[in-house]
Length: 234
Image (cartoon, rainbow, N blue to C red; front, side, top):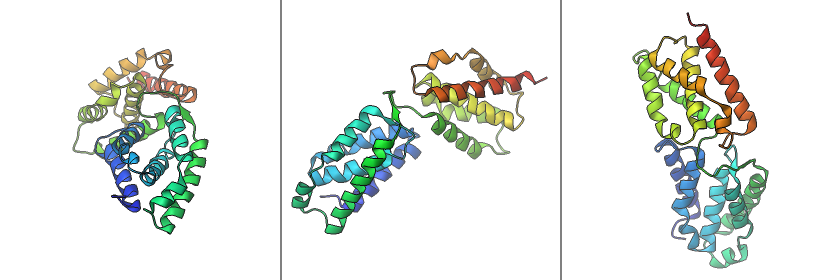
C-alpha cells in the first residue's frame, strides 16, 4: 500500500473529523462524504479495500442508527474480503494482518446489531442535533453578547440544516427556545417569531422524515412545554 496500515486509520478518522468539526456536518453526512473520499482507493488492492472498509465501518457503528442500504453494502463488502489474497499481497506485517482480521470480526458483529435508518437523505439525528445545538449555545452564551445576537448566531450556524428537513428546523427552534427560557430570557423579539413557528407545527408534516415515533412524540412534548412557558409570560 502506498498508504500504510496505521496511516489509513489516521487519515480516514481525520477526514471524518474535519467534515464534522470544520464543515459542521451531521455524522450521517460526514461518513457519507468520508466514504466518497476513499471509494477509489478501495479499488487499489484487496488490502486497501479491507483496511478502508473496516475503518469506515468502525466509525459508522458509533452512530445512533445506520442507513439500511449503507449497512447492507458495508456488511457485504467486509464479509466478502479475501484474506488469502490480502496475505498474498504481502502489504501487511503478520501483526497487522491478524489485527485486521480481529477488527473485521468485531465490527461485523457491531454492524449487525445497529438500529436501522430508512431515511435516505443525509441529516442530523434527533439526539445528535439537540446535543450539538446545546453545545454551541453554551459556547456563545457569554455576558458580552446580547440575546438577539445569540438567536442570530444559532440560526446562522444551523441555517443549512433548517433548510434540509422540517424535523431539523423544529429541533433547532425548540432547543434554542429551551435554552433561552431556561435562562429566563423571554422578552426577545426573535424568540417570539420562533414561537409562532412552533405553534404552527404539525407532527404529521414530519411523518415521513428521519425521526422515529418515539422521537416525534418527545419533540411534541418539548414543544408543548416550551409553549406553556410562553403562556406564563405576563
